[in-house]
Each structure stands twice: as C-alpha cells, then as structure tokens.
Length: 384
Image 1 (tube, rainbow, N blue to C red):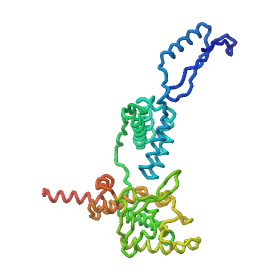
Image 2 (cartoon, rainbow, N blue to C red; image 1 turned 180 degrees about the horizontal axis):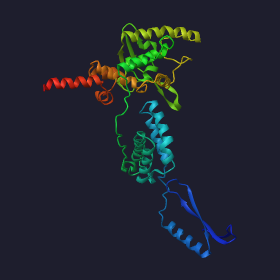
Image 3 (tube, rainbow, N blue to C red; image 1 turned 90 degrees about the vertical axis):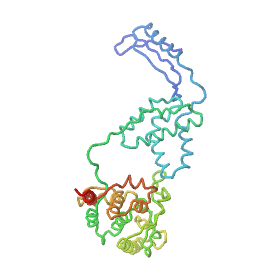
Image 4 (cartoon, rainbow, N blue to C red; image 1 turned 180 degrees about the vertical axis):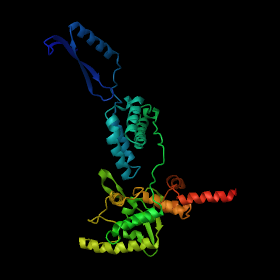
C-alpha cells in the first residue's frame, strides 16, 4: 500500500507525494514503480493514487509460465542455425543480431512483442541503411518462426508488418567495370619491375575473373603451368571475431578450372620466381606445395582489404575514371567475355555461377561498340 508523504518544495511550500509499485513489466519481467509529487493537498494526492490503484486492478495478471525472452529464443535458434550455413555466414549473422536486433527485442518476452514494435524496428532500420534492413527483418522473422514451432507463441507478429521500399533513384548508376582501353590504362600505372606481386594479382583478377577471396586463397599447386589453368577450390573469408579463414566455394559450380592466356601464365611464372627470392630473404621457404601465391610479409594470408587499398591508391594517384571496386574486375572480365563473343553458358561456367540467371542478372554490361553493332544489325535486317 502506497503512503502519501509531506515535503517542502524549494520555495518552502508544503507539498505531498507518493511512490506506488506498478507490478512487473509484461515484456521485460522487471519491477516497475512510479513517483508522483507536487500535490498541494493530501486529498489531491489521495485521489491521484486511487486512480492509479484502480487501473492496476484492471490489468490482467501476468502468467507465471511461457515468459521466455526473445534473446533466449534467439540463442536456441542460433544453435541450430550454425549447423546449416558456413562459418563466414553465421559469424556475420551474430554481428547483425548483436548490433541491430537484440538491442530492440532481446530483453522482451517473446509472446508480448507486438506487430507495431516490429514495424517500428523495420522503419528504423530502413532509415539507417540501404539494403540490409531486409536481411535483418528476415532474421527477425526466423526467430519468431522458431518460437512458433516450439510453442512459445501462437502467431508471428513480424510477418504482419508493411515492408518499406526504397524508391529507385533517377539517373544512371555508375559503372563498376572497365572496358578494354580503361583496363590498359590501369595496368600502365603499375610498374611490373618494382611491384610484380601487385601487377600479378590484378592481372589474375582481370584475366581469370576470380573473386577477391578466391584469388587470395590461391596456392601454387592450384596453378598448372603446363596446361595453363588455374584451379578454384577454396576462398579466403572472415569467420568468428573477424578471423580470416579458408572455406570451400559457396556452390558446386564454384569449384572450377579456369583456362589462362599465355601472357597471364608468363606473369605468374615470373612472380613465382621472384617470390622465392624475396621470401628467402625474409627467411621463408616458399617451395612448399601449399605456398600462397599472394602472401603477406609473414608468409600468411593477406588481409582481404589489401587489394582494395592498392586499387584505391592507384585510382587516386593517377586520376583514373570511373572508379571501380575490386569486384569490378570480375564485372570487367565478364563484359570483356561478352564483347569477345563468348556465350552466356561459357561466361557462366568460367565465373562459377550456379545458374544462368545469376550471369544474366549480374553481368548485363555491354560495350558501346556492341550497342552500335546491334543497332546496325537491326537496320540491315529491316532494310529501310
């Protein structure tokens, strides 16, 4: 029972106050109380207190069971989730929950979370980021689905929200690839004699079309100098706590053998010899079959950020336009293949895409020359 107490305010006036226990928060399970003060008479304070007590009596009694918190359901879900995906995936997923989902829902009882709370969360994410809000939402749905299957809740409130949609921006999006002349310009900016490894790395990216992680995971036993091929069977990525790890390719088609041109083979052979000499000076024997093609000064994995830093410095120093990312070399490779007359199936196989749709959706770049050729072919066919 709350007690009304008398006190003096800062001006010396007599005032009345009370503090009343409100029970347990149905979402967090924590005790709640409120303090009211500033009443000029004891009767005014008693009336206010009586109203609060009546409201409390009308609130439903909190059940003693089925009060599991969202964070506990998440941990149950996550324990089975890590058995269904690669380490790089579940490591990233944990970060998304820790940074974006658990701060909003972790301390709430699963059964008390409302559609409105889910909607507000998605609206907040929508304002913060461009694309990831959909991924965070899908993970939120997955935890509720897990709770639904295990009888913790009777419905999934996250499925009832209205998904916000980013309006498409006007104008053309900047290209993330270079044509033949732009690639030539780029490679002229790297001195093969002074920076052989850097030249070789970007040559492999541009002429083999491999991904950054696939390139940095290459060992010399993956390079067949006799048959002029490069074998992709692993990738460098980030695992738990950001540690760099080697994983298998994401799909079966990702395991592939890529044919190399004569010049790329010669550049690799030259770097192979130079690497031996340089790392012998550093105290490392690089004659082992699992020796990395591109290693750091401790003969370990290069940072995944290194190619990007190299690329950005060259683009900035030589004022190369347009600016592209490391992945842009893969786009450039695909565009060059199409420009050279390769079929969709050939490009799909060389890039290791699981299906043709991926090749068509991601690599739709064509050169201006191809566009003009298409226009000329149409005009010649129509004949007027």
